[in-house]
Length: 594
Image 1 (spheres, rainbow, N blue to C red):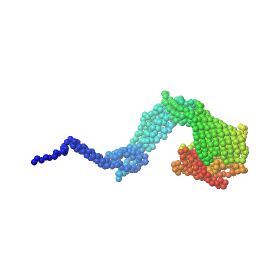
Image 2 (cartoon, rainbow, N blue to C red):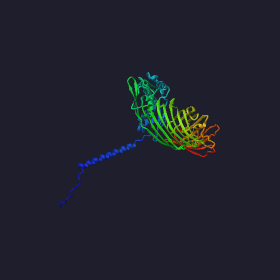
Image 3 (cartoon, rainbow, N blue to C red):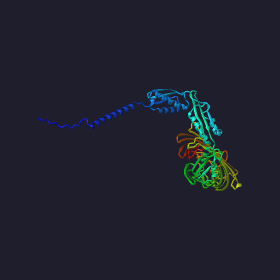
Image 4 (tube, helix red, strand yellow):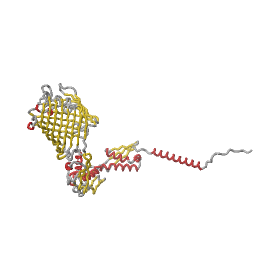
């Protein structure tokens, strides 16, 4: 019998296709094995240990941490190589602080590396070798720098001090006009064995440049007028601080929208200041509002034209409206010799006031000379013609006219910012009136004030003290206009009382205003939050005709909000030992403390 077998359909195992598959599988197994080995190796690498450094100042310890941080994983190893790297890092970190003989020990425990450092003696400077060539060596600023150099004998070595002094000496020389100054020798020698260091600086200054004629372009303002602001003339020795001051003063005039100052070196050791300006002829309008319990809502509108003509004239119109007072004043300014510090002002204005039993309307025209004396004292003198219609107390309405020569002087210094900690303010003025000049009365009026702001030792507390005095000398006080008589009370006078509610009264109990004024205050304020202060205060004083008139006192508490637009003060004050006036009064005001 014949037997038949089914055909075998299985592909042979040794075909090219099957060989490729097998090879690919072996490659994948190899890659997987390699990845596993790398993962195990990465897991086996220890993280850098935590560091604890003993025996160093904060600055030196921080510098050492920076140097050790650059070692990375080497810190986790306890090998000869890692110890050498730590040793090098430690000495590189401490040598800039003058420690060239430092010793240290290492302790590893539970992932913590403790480095205990014995700094050893510090390297000290020996007398330096500082040579400055002529003519720079005789300049007072450079001579003082060399004399007071921080690299003098016996001073501890700090590389940073040496670097700063070296750079500052060169920069100062160039600022003073030695533009070609350079070091022919600049090195810091350190003898670690002797623990000695010497600074060696040889400066060759070259010629000192002098100012050439200043060149000003792009403005209609008379260049001769602007040159008065410079503080230097052609031929004067160059000083970059004078150039910076010139730029500040030019900006302070308000004449310019854009301003660029450049210094160009020219042949024969000349330096020319070039001023590129663009005039600011645009009229600026300022509109604002404020509030205080003296004036309730107060609206302000100002108009200022900073530059009218080539002579540097300017015009301001300032107005303020509130319930008790309304004022508008125009000021036309004419530079006399200096656009900032020597100015003639032509003024005219209107003022209305209705407070308590006083109703006054005043029109004025005048001229005054405004000067800056001794740097920051403001001095004014001038004369004004004033016409006033007023009623005071039970008196009938009066019309008066007087020519009022006047003079005043003031000075204010205050820390910058919305929360100044120290400063002072002084102000004094005299007004005169005489019938010989056509006035309605003869009198002399003086008024002065002083304010002091002190920072107390805890740096968060301030003490504010103020005093205000005034006097009128006359044989006919009833002829003195209402606007010039004295009264006290209000936000900036004696808190706890209404504005100008304190003063002599007539037989009907109506205010008439006083010959004299005497007011004082003490206030202590402490910052309790970044933008908040609390305050306690006492005020006292009076406006009076005779020395035995009543003295008024008040006390209270307040808060100060240091807002983005300035200090806003809220005070609650109460009269002290005053039966006629009792109860608390709220006072709200804003602005700087002086």
